[in-house]
Length: 485
Image (cartoon, rainbow, N blue to C red; front, top):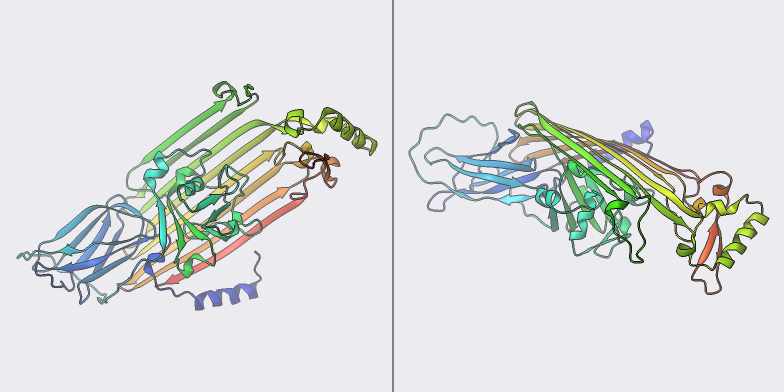
């Protein structure tokens, strides 16, 4: 989407006028702690200090209880472990340790303080305690770190974990590929968000990065994601099916790293159901990640690489794949030659199909202060496929080379201005380049010709695919979001 200066100013003004939301649990990339602090008699403890500290990253969120003893800690980065500490003059301090928080999660933690004569350092607070009460709405299904790390992922596409939900129907059935139906809605009715930013391709109504590629985000870089099927806030956008909201990983105070390599080839693969040995088949999958502190408790980094190199045979109207009599196939080739196609038989048979994919990811998390936190992340994917989209009844001209390059840059600033005033500002720029040239000239540029047999169940074809014929897609997106709660 290209915006002229005048349209950009008008769009920004409209966004500023519509930036107010109410449900704090809809902050997409963060979570919330809330609860009530009381004494032994069940009476509220007013102006108690409540502090949540992430012992892995040093992130701190603090507030005071209101007149009813209630507290609210918003814009808390997901993860953990968090330690929740409550202090008040005349009471013994209480802690809750090893707390884990998910994106969009609202955890209610009520704490009772015991009366005790203690001496604490003076606490200076410039915020006014206000009563804030919220309720989480909607049906949410989560996939967290434990599932992502331990469940098998064929092809390493984290979106495939949506198949864990009983209301998700993938299309095609072998992989979600960014196209899946939620609750019977159209596949185009599902909103995919990564780090709170739009990750959809408008033209094809699928995930950015194409349903043809094995994955557009590295499985190494995904921390968790949630599937929201109803009751989501306006912040998620206007989609009627469901919302898949993913959050990427960030670094901690500890240096960590991982790596993997996977190889599969015909020597490791069994015969098919017809007892045919596999041939000319090999897959390489590789990747690594590294994370740690640049400045302890303040600035952290995370980086990952995920790649695949795959080659396999594809069958372009062979005797077995087309299921057409040899005599009919010979007549079809003769007709093509009579109409000027040179050596038409070379467009039919067994060909090599390749699928090469590379995804690079980087993220920085800067805790500017206890009230302000800035996140910057960049994702790059480059997918290239040779002899794409060839069915068993087509000539190799029906496929062609396919390449999809995607850049996505997202910056997010979370600010806590007071106990009842929170703001999230997010900006994204993305670019996707998806050229679809024909197989070769002139054969790939000829409109597709199909000949059915007398029963219409089998066919032979020649020429370019009508769906992808000379389709050159370039998509630019500029997204500005400001949510004031």
